[in-house]
Length: 194
Image (cartoon, rainbow, N blue to C red; front, side, top):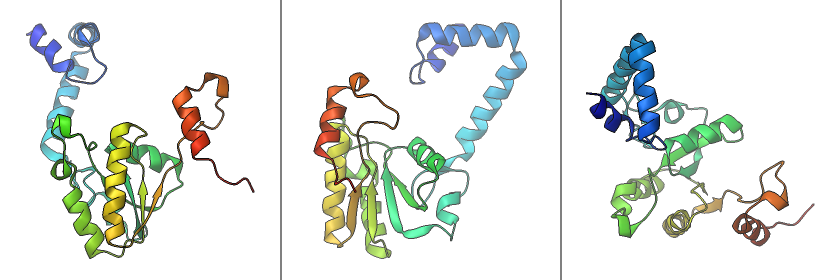
């Protein structure tokens, strides 16, 4: 039974066998009520959390709270790779539009194509709605850039303005501790200083 639990915990990213073992022994030795609460919450989430039918983020309702919010700007769609990216952007308080979650990035080698990312759904959304701007917030990886390029090409078919979030040196970051790829990207994406 403990080995089965260990395998179950190690499906989580960043959790190896030793970490899983620590979790298991803690729950079994010190917090059985917490273990039961965790098991119950997981079962409830697996049964009730689905994808929003518009933006594809995780939601207990047919439309997530952001898509159902009429105050948010329908003319902007921020394209992100994961629901966690929405959470990060929302914490900033700097964006009031809608989202579209890809749940990954284009990667033909891994068998992830247009259909797996819902890009056909995105195209319908762009065609059927009054979207004036797409904000590409995919990660600054090769796959993220390829995905952003594909979406930009799609947006051009509908004459939709496409912008890309800035990538570079983080606020409060120091150049000497920043990796060379980030510095190169920051230099190539520089803007006029007003």
